[in-house]
Image 1 (cartoon, helix red, strand yellow):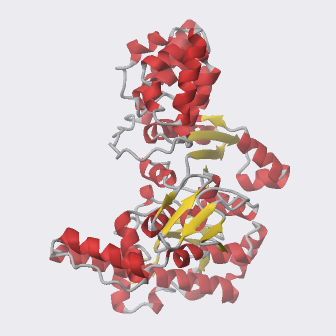
Image 2: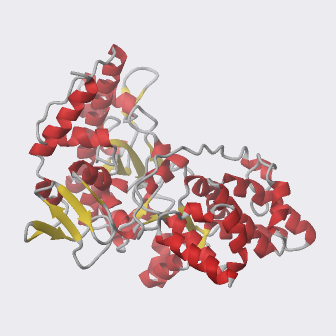
Length: 516
């Protein structure tokens, strides 16, 4: 039997044993309705149940958002994992043996090392958590969390812990509870640091500790904020075989279901920005791990939402971070907006002073990233002849970062309209790449090379004519609101972009209307 046939047999066995009602029922409150079960869809927000599960056919379908499939499709969508990972997860759950894959010694060693790293991180997370909850010496940390509005429920949900100060437990709080084998693994995980003269000491001391989890909940690393005096204020685990900060986001494991339902993410700058907003009732917040946003992080976001709002400080650093994110959003075809907080405010202080409703208004009025970029350039250079030339120079690489010719045409038309020049004038700037657009008051060369974008080919998905992706919705909106640009959009392939959807019907109707 071939490997393909073996896996085909395994997936068939899993489908036989995995009751789709039971699997989905662990996530969705299902009610029997005739021969099927109904519930609220976990993939979009709704108040009236439109999510149907057919046990006889082992199939689900949502009449609201159009999601459908079998038990594997559900797990893939619900957990944001690949088909292979969904098979492994369900095989483990229903004790179906998977076909053995021949692996090299190096592959086996790597897999075993990953297992050990996850195990030691999990043990450390439990020790930090228990210390925060029970130790008398953790009282300052508990008071700090209480002052920040962090409830016991949030502490439990995010598994927040505390790494005690060396003055209380010495240098080896963790090391004293690890075996020699565990110590070696803990050094690789970055939990312990080797001393030059021999021995080890704890990396995290006198810090409130946040476990950083994979999508499936495995502890990959930690982020810590100091409670008392000392530097650095924030400290993260070093890179390891299981921890890559450029492709992870704090809060994704805990927040992914709400993010999917709202189809939107709020991206903030720090761990406590995230926790504070969760305490105020925002359940779709994520934070990068002490780094600028990366392509890997935005690809993670895209698995669960079609739009992200950057909620950053309104100082020069916040503006710089937002501007740097623009080409990444365009390359990943993720709809992005930015909401800047007033100077001297972080999310917690802003809500404390102005209230939750004021923050919600700020988010509702968030500016689209390309428009934000343009406005920053206008503020910097003005709208004189020389200013417009500099703006065009700065926008050229931004337009070039767009992932499709049609998207580039849209930006050219929009920017040209704002600047009061013909869209064709952008053509002369298309080859002027290489530098990231300059920020207010700073020369472009300080930014280094413009991010190199690789556009990946994707399989063409099945099209539901009643559903539009976020880019398609934006195209339709632009088409309707800017009929003067209709000819340009049509020439650049708008109909093909909307093919098979309700957007194509609108395109054809608008075409007839404009011709009459």
